[in-house]
Image (cartoon, rainbow, N blue to C red; front, side, top):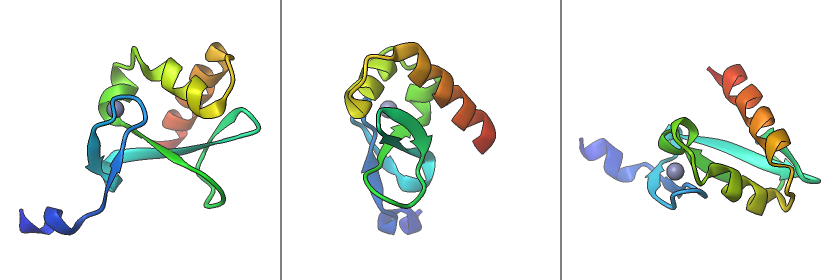
Length: 85
Ligand SMILES: [Zn+2]
C-alpha cells in the first residue's frame, strides 16, 4: 500500500494517535458549542476508536471547547456522527 504513504495524517485529540485524515472525524467548537467543521477557523480531529469507546473523549472535548457542559457536548457529538453516516 505505497499509496497510503503519501496521505496526510492528523492527531486525534483524545488518544493522540495519528491516523490518515480520511479515517478521522473533523470537528470544531464555536463559542463552546460543538459542530462539524464548516471550513472556517480552528478544527480538531477524533478517531473512530475514540468515538466508539471514548472514556477520555468527554474530557478531551471539554478541553477543546473550554466548557464543562459534558452532556451537551456528548449529545451534540452523537448528532453530528449520526448525520455523517
Ligand atoms: Zn482517538
